[in-house]
Each structure stands twice: as C-alpha cells, then as structure tokens.
Length: 104
Image 1 (cartoon, rainbow, N blue to C red):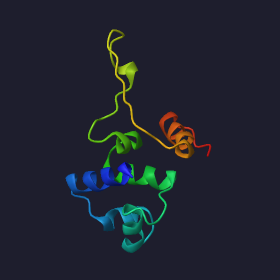
Image 2: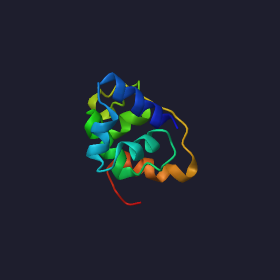
Image 3: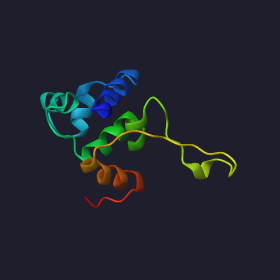
C-alpha cells in the first residue's frame, strides 16, 4: 500500500521514530510496526493521528512526495489535477477523509 510507504518515508524524513507514533496511537512499537508493514489494518482515526505526528495533512499521506493543493488556493485560470488509483472499497473512506466527514 503506497500510503504505508509514504508514512515510512515521511517518518524517516522528519526524524520521527516508531516509538513516537506508537505512543500517540496508544499502542506498543510491535503493534505499530505491524501497521506500518501492512500486517495490521490502518484505521482512518489512526491515519489522522499519524498525519498529526508527522505534521502533514491526511491527504498528503496519499499523494507524497507531491503535496495536494486545494484549487481554491490558486487563481481561477490555474488548475491542478491529481490522479491515483484506489480500490472501490476504499474510495468512500478516502472521499470522507478528504472532505472531512467521518461517516464510515
């Protein structure tokens, strides 16, 4: 899962160790390691906590190394488009995270 690779890269880039994220998630390092390695499921709530620890937005965990920019921040003549594949069962979760709604 690309998100997990991005989390690892951002964690290394920002000098954040697994212990720091595990503490924020209220779990031990072993369980966090399982999340980061895709063995244990990563929930939306945990994704938000990880983003906060890494000081990025949740959407940036999906788009890294590119940074998502809201089109409202650009002049009307400029446009930005980000394309990436998401499995159908994850599409609603992603849309909820991007729009800020937590209906899952």
